[in-house]
Length: 257
Length: 376
Image 1: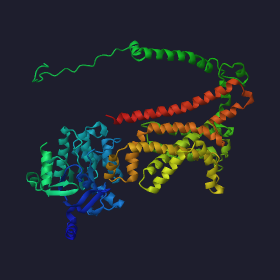
Image 2: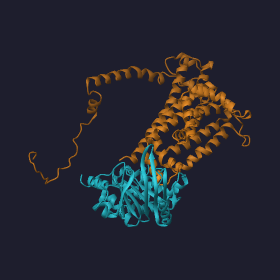
Image 3: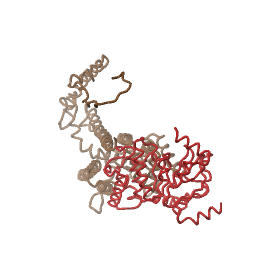
Image 4: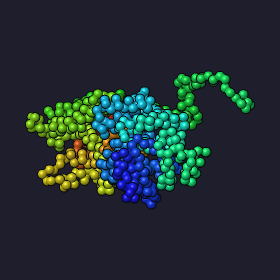
């Protein structure tokens, strides 16, 4: 335990996120059990596992949407504590994309993107709009800027959500099952956007069941079950020769149904 | 074709226009008024009722009415028609109460400025509405107070609020109630959903207490208890007390409407806002409340309408609102007569109806224009 902490401190300069002995409970339910995971800058981590395994809880702990009760999480050199200032500091540097998009339906696409830069970063409106248009261009939907989210398809909405997160110029991006709520024909456009982002060197944690995507972009794949990390490996060996029985069972279930 | 097991389409089906519905008045009437025996009967019954009730009523209000008369004598002779002459004779009193005649231009000015600001604020797409709001909520109350109450420094004689009365007091009460109850209600609703137990309990206690007590009780309490809580030299004005009462009363109901809107909003909106780094006030002000309030516009306007009606109750604590001014006007012996009271109350009803119907139509218009942009 102590050795691990020393290692973590030594590696702080190039670790984007560092989990040390993290536990979380929902009431009596032990949702995260002794999570130890270090993610370096520019690394892409894919987390998979059966539903209820704690993978969403884990990434929601990174930006303080969930609180952990034991252990430490250090994000970009800032340790997450219940201190609100710390959490805000972390949230400014960490972008998040949700399964259900969570766009603001009363604002246009452009306003969705400029809201946080203007009000949190105190950016002048014109600069924020310029930045937003640049990022909407990057996710390939600049022509939808003046529409409302309700007028877009699911895939377009999710790409807007990615652009909105990127407008804060985050160092780390979290993706919580970004394609699970999409119609099958729209999954690809979102994955392509994420692949492009990965190729630009963004630090990413992605919770997903898209194994093709994981194989293509992940540096490491983390398999979680029952609140604990069961296996971590590079995508090649992870998919070709999984070592733990539970990983094998999970992979056989999702790959051959 | 249907018996084929394998089928490959070679040409596309043409895109045809939908079949034409039968049009015209006769077709519409048949479909909507006489579609069945029951529907035909209902139509006949209601048309008969309208023919029976409406002509005498319209006749009473127009052709048989007395439109101009120096006093009530003419109205006493013609008792089958309304006595509008009474309204025009008493109109100044109904508008201003006992406000000194030489100073009534001040009331007119306040009303005109207020009306302009409200139209400015409520027109969608009006220019620089932020400045309008600032003027209305900050500069206008000061202007209204200085003009209505008076100021020696500006050479405006002070008019005691005992003399205020009529439509202008009704409007003042309603506007003050509306302007204060909405923000107060929003705060109470947020307080009721707060994580801080003290704030939450205090909000619940206030809301449930006020909602559990009749409005008249609140008015009496504001009238007699408010002075007890404040320093003796600071005795609140006789008109201010019911104003505070009405704002607090309405705020409790408003809070429950707003809470309903907050509950309709999913957790995702909060999480989306938090993940972007928006702090609580920004999250509420920019993301949560705009959506929650829009969803409960009908309920909020319903509260405004109720509040406007409730302003008539301030008369029981000695404030001369429009209805009370009307009751006072009936006491003029020169204008006593059997048709006078009916005329007066019909006129009062029309005034309240026009104001409240206007509010509901405006809210329907706002809902429609908000829905236009957002829905698929």
